[in-house]
Length: 231
Image (cartoon, rainbow, N blue to C red; front, side, top):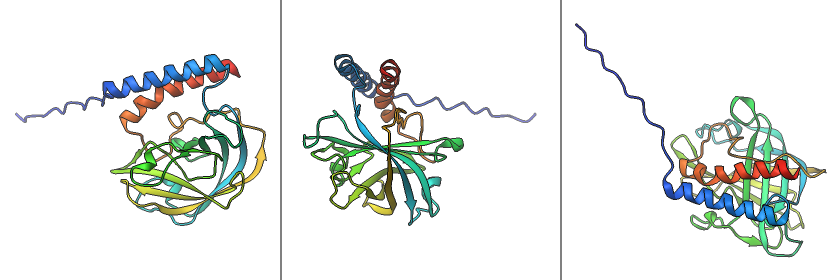
């Protein structure tokens, strides 16, 4: 008689209670802001552009299809301020990028970047600015690509009121930034009504850590509901 072994399924990872609590608290806070303001809580006002993302220096070993080959990718970019303050006021700048075909199974991928520092620690800290694209913007919260922690950086080029070109760079495992290409804003369009959602529209080859999903997902779920209500 031949003995057979059975392999127990690996239970799914469960986000920690602090991460779940932080996500719920963030969602409640955004809900209150939206209720008082009568509009979506963050980045309610912005400018949308037809753009191109050009990859010049691929990262071959990374496993992210968007970044493993040279090429030009049409995309949509929205520039905004977190609290929608007027020009010249201090606020956190935001850059939302939608790249068709860069998500799993050929769907779109959304990238959200905010003004932060660029150091090993300061890249995880929001930085208020007077111009939404006057300082470097990063993806703030880390994501995973294979065995690596991955962060993206968009560094504005030039000194325009709204930057039209950004150097695109990546950082692995908290290391130095490596330039991979260029993001160019081409033609301004009517402001986008589609919500950019990196939880739903992940970049192929990446997956956020469980604690990031636990923090972000409740807030994005509320944002989607509030967006339908105020559309």
